[in-house]
Amino acid sequence: MTDPLRPVFVERRAYRRRRLMDAARLLPFVGAVLILAPVVLRPEGRAMTTAPTLIYLFAVWFGLIVGAALIARRLDDEDRGAD
Image (cartoon, rainbow, N blue to C red; front, side):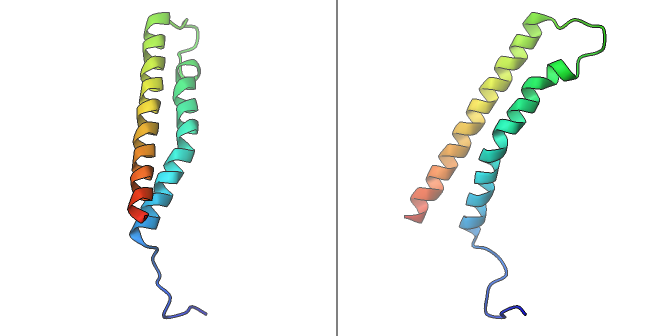
């Protein structure tokens, strides 16, 4: 059934690269949820105030940019390390 000579685990570098790629694919969905959170989670009957909402949206936007840059840098480092 299973080949005893075949390793069970994936190489560490390949595993980390796959997890980074998964994080990069998941980032837009996390961003969408975070951006829609003030609209979905606001209490019933209360109006949204502009200033705190805009600060929150810019903070989420900035966080997504930083997160994407960090993931891209790590993926680039992984590519350079494989060469």
